[in-house]
Length: 216
Image 1 (cartoon, one colour):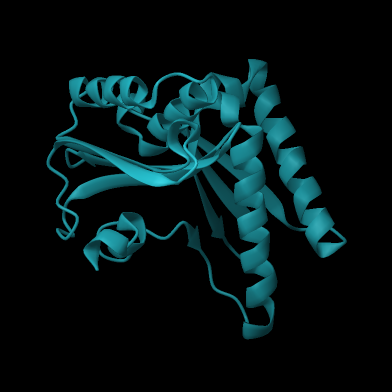
Image 2 (image 1 turned 180 degrees about the horizontal axis):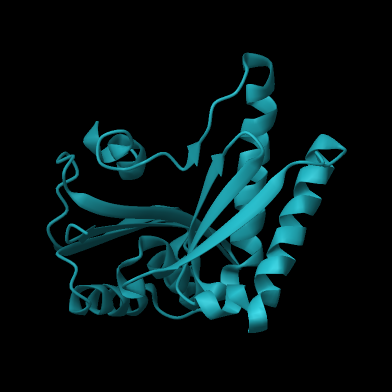
């Protein structure tokens, strides 16, 4: 079963924190959970140029703390902090759309942190692979080059799985590429994981990336 379990979810509560951290009454749980999911998806789409990889949401009594992890924080912050204010207004608009009205005493606090090593971020690696596949570059060359960059950046292992109509084939298939070690069953292993679908001209190709990093 180890190959079928999401490595991030497998480690949450043991070595990784939850992406959303808050408590609520039972009647409000569903609405707040859906609100979190839509805020996270909207921010991932809006800040794609900033190299965003993660959105953590923490709810307090009268405030919402949103922690953004990006590879280019200057794009988010903007000149004189104007970018941060724009993102805050964007989040307020999303909350107003979900709740039909914005609570008067609710504050939005945005915190931006920079990725120490973008080349070992599974999400950014998968995004780069998808961008090159959509430009019709040969998949073997694309994946091999991406894995070489990851290993040269200090990773201990990397695995990439492509599944779908690879190279426009009529019958879908899987291609697995692997360098180094990926101990999927070791909870203490610092494994980063991402899965993103690539919408190509002749159909979808799923891209999954596992990266074993040093303990941070």
